[in-house]
Length: 65
Image (tube, rainbow, N blue to C red; front, side):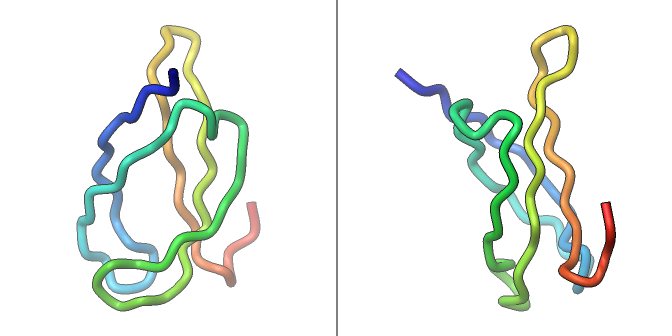
């Protein structure tokens, strides 16, 4: 059973803080989801720290990572 974790992220376009649900099955994955406020595509990179905490990094389509 996959665990969902709620994270608050800042949209790289409009800067609004939005809450997203991250599925533990998405670890080490990249995916795109539209901002709930401005509807622009946000690129999500999901990883796990050494201590087991899920880390979410977000980027605009124009940013390189």
